[in-house]
Image 1 (tube, helix red, strand yellow):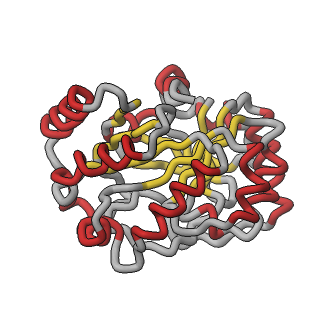
Image 2 (image 1 turned 120 degrees about the horizontal axis):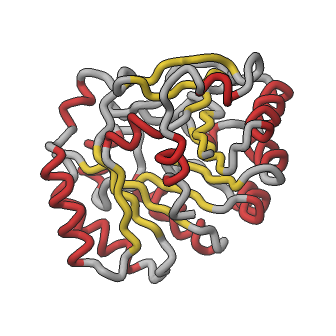
Length: 269
């Protein structure tokens, strides 16, 4: 199974279209290790450490030290917090890092991610990830505000010169965590499909994969910092139980969860 574990909901940005959970306290480290143990006991193969912004968690490297023996580990980040010190600890134990990049010009990037976003830092850190030989995935959410920037992003990825970079294109996911303001970013499904097909045709050398909102709203398992398990039910995430109180398998039996669809999320690893 593939699980997104939001190890913190703290974030330096306030993206209006964010679908993650917010304003939850960080968990004690010993309880986090118990959550990791519970995931391992329930046949979880891949854990994506997310947030919030996972690099804001003061014990991210310690979490990775504990978890990498049990799971294939990924990290999803906005790319603004990084240091050579933490990279030297996490690189040997992390399979892949996903960095959000929705534009390569400051104006469009801040429309997407807010005034606190610093594109120059993100671009520098992408180069730093590659310098440390980390497998890299660029995550781009296609919206009405950045759809004209997609070729520029493609050209930037090509310029990095690494054929192993994955470029994942997302349709904006609308669920109960997205604000009303955030919903204005969306484009029609038909337009999303056309844009993805055009990019694949124009850039055959790039490893382009895509994810529509139905994928997020059907196959994802999200674990919040305290161990609560959230799964999609009718396009909204519903809390079904806590890993420290009940086995994950028992929790998922309460809904008609698509295990095959969940496993397909691991195909690009």
